[in-house]
Figure (cartoon, rainbow, N blue to C red):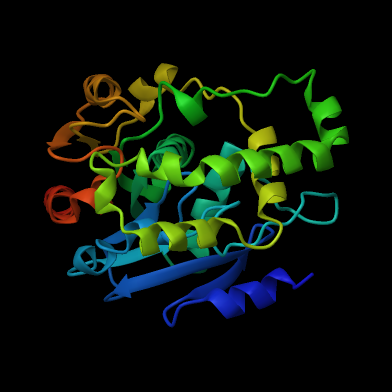
Length: 295
């Protein structure tokens, strides 16, 4: 089988960069002046850096923007955790990856911009490392449902790990069969997602032994109880929701904006779970205004 490094080289864009961090070879891109403010973009599950394609350059006008493929997605490597490496897929490990990647790139503090499960990781990073976070933008963030509340029962994990080859093959078949329909379901108007863009997202996910990496991510899911910790966040925050979001219901984002101390709220019309893709100009304007107010 072709090595993942060869896959990375073959599929990389002209502006792709790679760095070894926390046991992963991380695929990332940087736009902007190299000066603060710094924005770190965290995409959602089943997606990749590509999800930010329409907003990275506009957001980089007057800022430095870093986006990377989260573990199990895109062109970031998918090592199997072992005693011989430090690669871990848990939510907590992903927060460590965020701050260590920032350190490797010379970024002391950043505004974290997270969509969907990327919003979960952004908030968890802010709670665990507030000294490294200047503010958070949470777009359709999974805080009360989905990834943040999923949990593989601990008593089942040894059994499931023993049967990893079987379960990862089953997961591969299910995701492959449902992928296109599920991704279109993130959009308010599914036809706005071009067929070639959808095919590119599929390619981003389904590289190398991709189902094994996703299986490792799945095994590490556990209830984060973020709702109990919201009052502890004393950082500027902007909650963004698509008016028609059904993946993370708009009502959940409204609740988040009320329970997160001092949070601002932006409801973007005519879009669903991916405002940065379906309404990129409105999303960019909302984030820029927030950044200007807190820097």
